[in-house]
Length: 280
Image 1 (cartoon, rainbow, N blue to C red):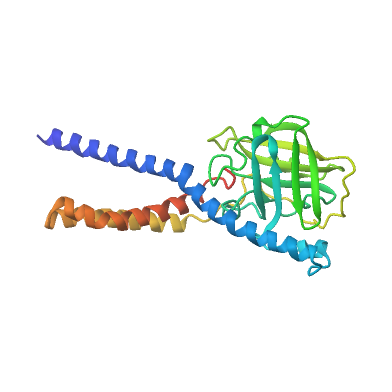
Image 2: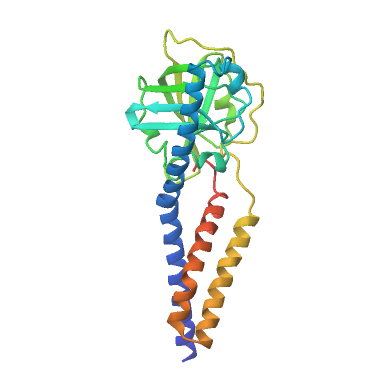
């Protein structure tokens, strides 16, 4: 009898853990996409307004305007016809930035400026803008629009590197665009790097970048404490529903606590995902 109870409890625990894992996978693949779509709508509207102000002469010096853009603000629109990508790019490569769309590496020039402009993007979560980046081949076109104008890049090569190989973001003495994402799909073991050169007859501006790229190609992760606290809150709600079921009735107790548990679980998943590589 005691063995049967232990095995029953073990079985229920395994089912619970399995269900939570499936819910987390569902959140990563679909829930994050909803967040990204909402953010894209907002930042695209903001950037379109900025482009209109430039065209109307309200912003007389576009170079000065983009020299100190805060992280998370829109800086460009990237269009890759081969893989059906049309996204607004934000400044920064931390998870809060990449939740909105592809992110421009601070410390590298913006597209259209001299040097190595670099952009990171998610491959499996938050809209997965670079999901098919591995399909790009030499000769494919990448179009980018900033407040300085529209620029066309031609894909030159694809590399697979370690997350620590930040030298792929170094200035190589030419005018290039570098795209980075995790590789292979659903893994953060390596990085796929697509290198494109500015097309012929494309005017470039002097680069305003002057920072040094530090760390690695993971982007910036968030602290663990919010995820820990929300995990404890989920556990507390679960324990309360179990205790209430023992004192009252089982299924009505679960039904009463379920909405609170699901809300807490959603925010826990969101904070826990911040502990993953930012461009996963």
